[in-house]
Image (cartoon, rainbow, N blue to C red; front, side):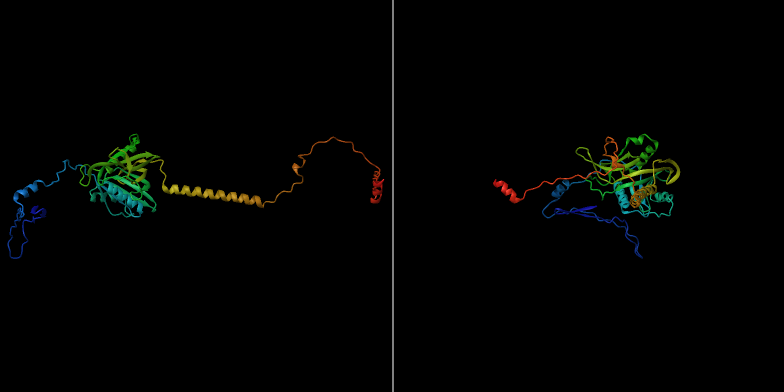
Length: 358
């Protein structure tokens, strides 16, 4: 790299570093020597002033850390065909958060899972996150240590990506994360195996070329309701509080295998229910409610159409009757005499007037 000073401006010229020129027909090879750069002083400035300006130049120091990149962990993140947009955004978010991740084209559904080990070998990766879509609505995630195992299969639920969530957290791209695990990971052996698998997969190797020497966010793995809840938080520099960045998802463990993408089963979750069984139970419950409503309607309709029974005597007729004394029954043999009603004679008006004069 050669420097030329013209006044206050600085120009950088790259010299041709090729030692030989091209050979033409009928000519011998000629050695090529690059030209040397010279300091050309300005008309109004001397060499001393140019040297002073050079002393005041700002140079970027070399990095303080002289460590070497020894942990060569590389993670291959890809999926099968048939995934939806949400899964595609989730994969892109994971690749953004993990600088040691690599991508590959989608795998055909007809291919067997053992082919993934060969793909990892071609890509020079020893860890793999494979998203498998089924029925365009169910998403399964394989996390494997290629090529010798172990591997685990999860059902991914409640996916929320960075573009979907309106969260205020933010972090530097390529920075190394802290990994926080629930205390339950150390109590059971299958959770301890998953913890070690998560550490080797999600932790960014130290001194990785694409990583930044900062720690400003944390990955949390929490166990609740027999599921593993993944969250990503930003560490606030002022007070050390946490603000969620995203993405977030829930992992429901299905099986743990001894080999990579297969082999003997080390652990099987007894509480796991397949999404097909869950949907079947939901349909049966909805059908039972419909049948119950139909039975109630039929019963009400039968009550309305049934003929009402005619009662010979009213049961409530004798409620207000009070018992009376029994009287001897008199038997009359002759008809009773008619009663004579005497009419009161009323004086006429003329007689009343005469009586009034007297």
